[in-house]
Amino acid sequence: MELRLGVPVTGIDAVAHEVTLDDGSRVGYAKLLLTTGSTPRRLPVTGAGSGGVLYLRRVGDSDQIKEAFQTADRVAVIGAGWIGLETAAAARTAGAEVTILEAAELPLLRVLGREAAQVFAGLHRDHGVDLRFGVQVGQVTASGSRVGGVRLADGTFISADAVIAGVGITPNVRLAAEAGLQVGNGITTDARLRTSDPDIYAAADVADAYHPLLGTSGSSTGTTRCTSRRPPPRRCSGRTPPTT
Image (cartoon, rainbow, N blue to C red; front, side, top):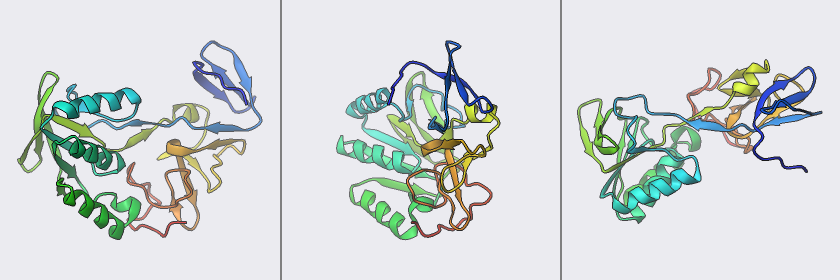
């Protein structure tokens, strides 16, 4: 196995079975696996561009969040997915008061189903987290890089010294789309992670895997279900099918 770092791919030639690197060179392939990942979705509300609204994706983000927890008395976490729950637990461990704001009625509801979602909600309540479900964020109040809190659509104000946003991801599909692959809620694949090109596969966050019986997985972990990380695709029902 050859590992080449610092060589971004700028294009895929599916006909020639080659990828083009940013220095103009080309690398041939017989089979190609795309694991281009995703980008955290940004909050589409006033004040969300403040430097005080933090996202978790890279090691540097983790360091910044950890530093914020050392000085924050109150933390607001927007989104009750994996990122939101993990950062909420870390903030409580650091001694901060934590409020989770979530549009759904339970955390991880579409990912785990109602029974497991209720367990996660109870676990965080037991550790002193204030859970607010069925709410919509209307604004993040901020002055420069300092946040003051979150105002909900109904006017309720949640005071916070730090705001963590975990509101999903956007799959990085540009290379696939420009290569003519079918894309939708990610790069469209079958149950074997094969794309619309039989020699190109996609996996992890960028893959929108589909099983004819169980629906969309949204990942390559082998668990087939509707996913809450991105808006559900049309073929994904509101129910959570059995996992495999």
